[in-house]
Amino acid sequence: MELLASSIFINKDHIEKFWVGLMDGDGSIQVNHWRKKNLQYRLVIKLSNLESNVKMLILISNQLKGHVRVSKDGKFVLWVLDNKNHIINIIKIFDKYPPLTSRLICCLSFLKCCLLNSDVEIYLASRKLKYSNQLNIIQEKNIKFELPLNYFNSWLSGFIEAEGCFSIRKNKQTSFSISQNKDIYILNVIKTYFNAANFIRTPYKNKSFYSLEIYKKDILLKIINHCELYPLLGAKNDSLLIFKKSFE
Image 1 (tube, rainbow, N blue to C red):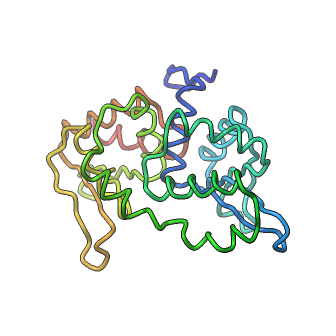
Image 2 (image 1 turned 90 degrees about the vertical axis):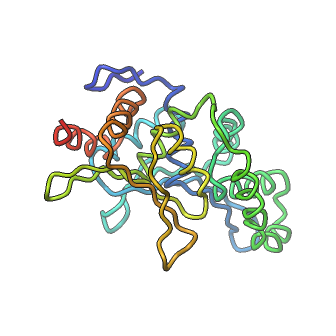
């Protein structure tokens, strides 16, 4: 159990749920082949090489296995889990707290199929179909995806760590924004969670990319309170502290 400066205890339960949200935002599930002889598996989270992100990924590796390394150019820090037995064990977390983005749902399903049948020829024939069910997932969740979820609070903090942005403009105006590709249902449920009235924007040139931006101070205060109760663990927490001072 880790004690942050905010005097909030971070237990493994929060870390697991937070990790699912972080994977939904910035994580990848990879299945590759080695010389068409056998399959190799990796789970990866890739972030900017900032001290807070390094500490967060080390915390995750201490709790959930994996190793942390810096990219050759020094720009990124990566958490990598490539031990097959550890991967089989860690994806049990997804059974308790299923991923919410259509992208990661598809990748996890493909990983599980490959773990059950590691035939390289079947893999080569099916890898292009990894996302074949993505549109159906999106359509289904657009209709019936709603709260409550027993892990949503900590998941949301992990997702904000990956996709959220606390902004302070030159005129001191503050805002919070979060974006998502294809999965508008994710932003709709976040909007509902914070009781925000903002429209979800779709940029003209990319109609599958959605953005939610919030300026209203009482909603921003709810977001700040959420991120303190269910703490951010990486560089986004540094942004939150600066944002909070400006907001006050």
